[in-house]
Length: 282
Image 1: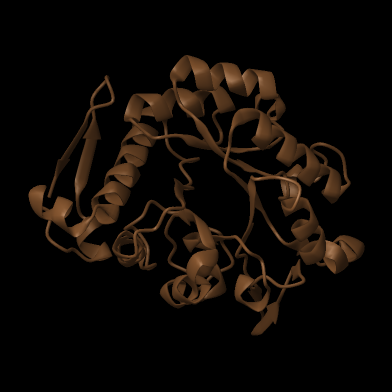
Image 2 (image 1 turned 30 degrees about the horizontal axis):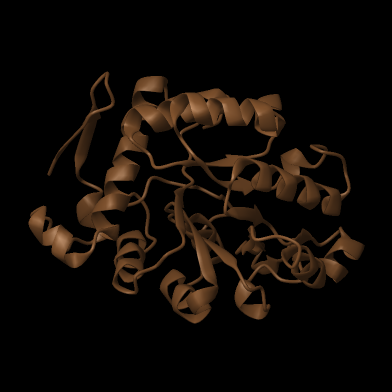
């Protein structure tokens, strides 16, 4: 919800009819405060489904510098708030000791809790015709044996990966999805609204519906350049797109929604009333 603060995420999620939120722990004090998050969740009646550990570049000092301490704090937060998942990135390459023990350490922590540690697919960076990999032991979860994985479609765009192939190969290990879009071909983690890029967002959602996927799907999209009204419209569009394509085929027929490609959906126009009602026209 950047640049807005954590309370705004709960407010907007409730207004637009989202099922819950994933809390990314950042420099915003509210995102680090279990009691505050519990009050926000209770007030807006929006459950916290997942906690994103502070493992980004700009959150390197949140909860200290020790990456294992960050995971312990994330676990404590998730357990206290009833979240089912902790999203974690693989180590940065310069975190040598952490990277060396990452896979085994996450497995040990997983044995101590029912909350899932879902390691996210990341990306390599293309510079002057060469691939630079900032993550270790690997940016690609297919290279490792993590029992739970987060699949992020903005990251597959940046890494030039085949998102559908990755999803199928992950199989039951795929327990968390960051639904977003990306054009790719540049070193930018875009997190576009689904349907506005080149990733198989609709295809993946329909595949997940077909296999009766039981994991979580979280919209992780960038609206940082938008004003409040535009942000509401974009988040409503993202939610409508996701629900449309994740619906079971029988429900799609009842709703009169024929199979569409991502490019078709991109041309739909959505508006949001002051009460959060979504109006969509083809």
